[in-house]
Amino acid sequence: MALLEIKNLQVRVEEREILHGLTLTIDAGKVHAIMGPNGSGKSTLSHVIAGKPGYEVTGGEILFKGEDLLAMAPDERAAKGVFLAFQYPVEIPGVATMTFLRTALNAQRKARGEEEYSTPDFLKKVREISKSLNIPQDMLKRGVNVGFSGGEKKRNEVLQMALFQPSLCILDEMDSGLDIDALRIAADGVNALRSPERSMIVITHYQRLLNYIVPDVVHVMSKGRVVKSGGKELALELEASGYAQFEDAA
Ligand code: ADP
Ligand code: MG
Ligand code: MG
Image (cartoon, rainbow, N blue to C red; front, side, top):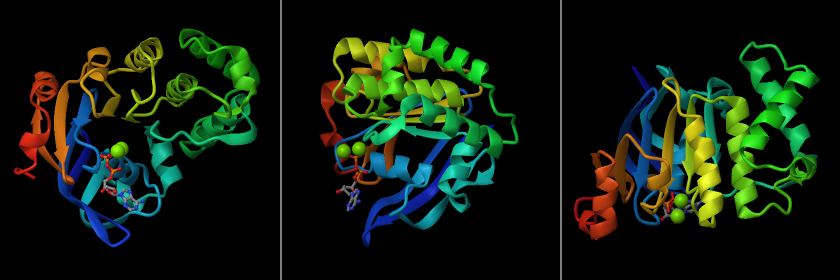
């Protein structure tokens, strides 16, 4: 069954239409890459799925596990299992990363009707995951993302994903600003979260990331629409031929 079904989605930002009838279906357990030139609407799509304010949906629909996602508030979407990571991680000075993780995790568990983690269980879980992601314990005591390097911010988001166990992870340009070692650690963390129940949307401008997170399906976005879909080999074709060929199709 489809985890996410987007049908003919039309979205405006500040009176200008950015998504012009975008259709996309994602099955449970699949990793879909979305590629496309700058300004094609990739981040807009991810923000609309997560429920970020400022986007006006003027047509179409989004079903998540068969339910109307657009009718849900952002925190409700998160509680249902939608997780958006990366392009511009927010800094929260004065709130230790550990405290933030615990509060957010317990709020989500509560919203799902699950029990909160006990302190020892929570600490054990965080330690296990942060070790696998090469996250030092002192980083977790610092304010959320404050003074974190690009690589540290991304590892912190992968840590959140591993804790929250979302059913849909949207990774928006996780490769931006990462050196190859940091990219490998973050990508390994993402790969460890692949499962038959969990789907991922990996947004990227470049093919390189998809050597590390190998997608099941690749889509090309151009001018607010999905203009081509294929297997992982499509990413390699794009690397060779560029995006210009899609300008007319869009
Ligand atoms: P991508 O992520 O593919 O680079 P975006 O979704 O960021 O594309 O942007 C798509 C288009 O929407 C661009 O033309 C961009 O200028 C415009 N856009 C995005 N966000 C805003 C905003 N908050 N206000 C005005 N225009 C925006
Ligand atoms: Mg962009
Ligand atoms: Mg973007």
